[in-house]
Image 1 (tube, each protein chain N blue to C red):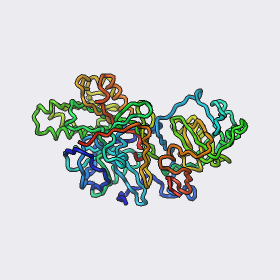
Image 2 (image 1 turned 90 degrees about the horizontal axis):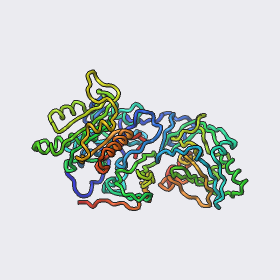
Image 3 (image 1 turned 90 degrees about the vertical axis):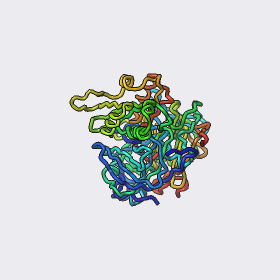
Amino acid sequence: MTSVGAAPKIVWRFATVIDVVHETPETRTLTLDVPGWPGHRAGQHVDVRLTAEDGYQTERSYSIASPPDDSRLALTVERLDDGEVSPYLSDELRSGDKLELRGPIGGYFVWEIATGGPLLLVAGGSGIVPLMAMVRHRDIALGAADIGARHRLPVRLLYSSRRWEDVIYRDELASLAEKDATLEVNHTLTREQPDGWTGFKRRIDRAMLEAVAWPATEQPRVYVCGPTPLVEAVAANLVELGHQPALVKTERFGPTGGSV
Amino acid sequence: MKKRATRKPKADMQPVDGNAAAGILSELFIPDLTAARAKCAGCGVTRTIGVLLVYAHGMGTVMRCPGCDRVVMRIARTPTHVWLDATGATSIAVAAPR
Amino acid sequence: MSLISRGFRGRRQSADTAGRLPPGQYETRDFPVLSAGPTPRTPLTAWDFTLRGADGRTAHWTWDEFIALPRQTTTKDIHCVTKWSKFDTVWEGISVDTLLSEAAAKGIASSPYVLARCDGGYTTNLPLADVMGGKAWVAFMYNGAPLPPEHGGPARLLVPHLYFWKSAKWVRELRLMESDTPGFWESLGYHNYGDPWREQRYAGDE
């Protein structure tokens, strides 16, 4: 869905939950039907607002996992034990429930085909969500195109997770990479690895980026998303490796200090 | 996902990126302000608002210059209004719609 | 009116601790950190505290001088405008009465208003009457330990009878003012005074 000219006014809408799927032990994907959804770009997010019976309200932001090409909206939520909102979204919400949200929000951390590549995506934990929207969008948008188009827009994804069970979209990423030689997925598992694991076993560092990332001379578009310390370290390393800061876009997760 | 709490106890509140303020800015401005460019009144450097450091203080949104830490914009929402103080930005430039 | 989210209760306790909770508040057992910027980390060797009169005259203490002043321990309930209240918080610090009388001894005249100024640029304003008479401290110990930086250490203002944004973290100066000057949140839609018992959260609240 293309939109030129002024951005649409962002209003609160009621979405209907179609489905809640367990991605990993700690994450769920909510599939939503959002009447009147104006469309979005990969990387954008929504604000979700919950209201208790006494009127108490709280808001959180969630990246959109679904590509703009899908008619339904998908949000992937990480369940935090001490969270106020995520346990509700993960455990309580059922298909048929309504959810109040507004969006799409954010024009800075977005990627579309026209942005170009090569594309370097670096994710820490649940930071994979907006990047997955980008990967999915690229796959669908280039689906019918000639193989040359894919070669002109290759993707390298470096994804840090604690354990193999925590890797979100694990099977989907494997199957996308298998059928598409221009999509390269590299995992690093920082806490525990399965038997026979030959991949990376440590936090992302400069050496890993040097091994995996496009060289700075390729001028890749870079998107880094995850916890603040990871994002800051990766961004600093990339700049040290010669990447132009203007081409490195970051989205940090921080503590939820209430609504923004 | 955005703005998820990290698992370790939160001793220090880490800032998030300017795009985290896009929601509340959309209550004030129709164009997406996170893609606009603001000149910091402190150090004079012009940056995309998306790269400002957002401190999502429970009382409001405070956006600071990543270079000099000065408050560029601050926003608070009350039941009746959204307040904006942008005196920390000497200028803000929004790209004209195509 | 927003949609009611089926089954959502939020983090609050459902039972009111009778009489101790101001209207609209809920009790919390933890101590949330709200920050408008990076945590200042002033070393104690560089830290000082100033009480400045409207005419510019100052009383000034280094850290060692400050903590040598007669100190008090106080146990108070605190109330944040973001709706959490925490009961029985224990603080140790210097009563603002002590600082004001030291200042008076140096000939600093009193003024009707105070502006608290802090590392990191935060400010908050109060009537002088609200920091006198045993109502306010500059606290450097919380729960028997040195006040941690994320909660305002080395020292913060403590004015528990008002919403906790008035208990300015990383306080370095109390400036006596002839006219009331709205501080950081007071100039952005929050109430100028902030009495939790009258639920004075926002400008215009009675």
